[in-house]
Image 1 (tube, rainbow, N blue to C red):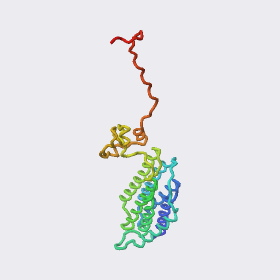
Image 2: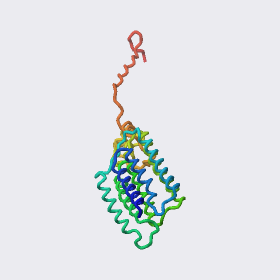
Image 3: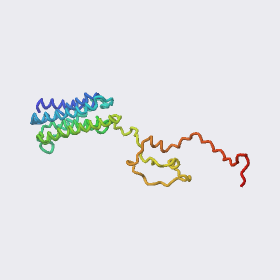
Image 4: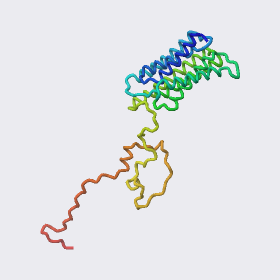
Length: 276
C-alpha cells in the first residue's frame, strides 16, 4: 500500500461523508465528484491515464447536470441526522472489517485497501437508501453503493480493464442523469424533491363515477335502499382529483324557487264563462 493509494482512499471516504452530511448543493456535488472520481485510483496497478480521465469526466458531467437542475431551485434536502460523526465511525468500522477479511478463503488480485474502502462506502450508503426522503439523497446513496461495488471488485479481481472502465463511466452518467431528470420533472410540475410516503396525495382511488347521482353518491338508491356492492373498479383508470370528487358528490345548489304560474283565465272578454 503506497501513500498515494492511502491518500486517494481517505479522499474518497471524505468526499462521501461531505456529500451525505452537507445541505448545500455545491458541497454535496463536490463531495460526490471527489468520492466517485478518485475511486479508480485505489487500484494496483493504476489504470491508464485515459481511463482515469474518462471516469473523472463522467462524474463531472453527471454532477453538472444536477447542478443545472438544482441551481435555481428553492427545494431543500436533509443531511445526516447525526452529522458526519456517525457515518464516519460506521465507515471506519466497516473499513477495518473489509481490510481484515480481504482474501479470506481465496487469494485476491487487488489491494486490500480497495476492499476496505468499498465496505466503508457501502455501509454509509445504506442510510440514505433506506431512510432518505428526497430524490437527491436516495440518488447519492445509489451512486456511492455502485462505487462501493466497483471498489470491492477491484480488491478481489484486480484493476478493471479499459472496456470495464468505460462501462463504469457510462453507468455513472446514466445514474446521475436519471437523478437530474427526475428532479427536473418534479420541480417543473411545482413539486419539491420529497418522496415521503406520508405526504398527502392529490388523487382519490375508488371514487364515485362522474355520472352518479347525489342519492347514489350518498350510498343509497333512489328507492331508499342501500345498493348492493358492485365490482371494484380499476383505480388506475378511474382516479379522480379531490375537486372532481367534491363536485360530483355535493348536492346541487338550491337557489330561489321559481314563482308558480298564474292560473289560466278561461273567461271571455265580458268576464262571463263560455258556455260548455
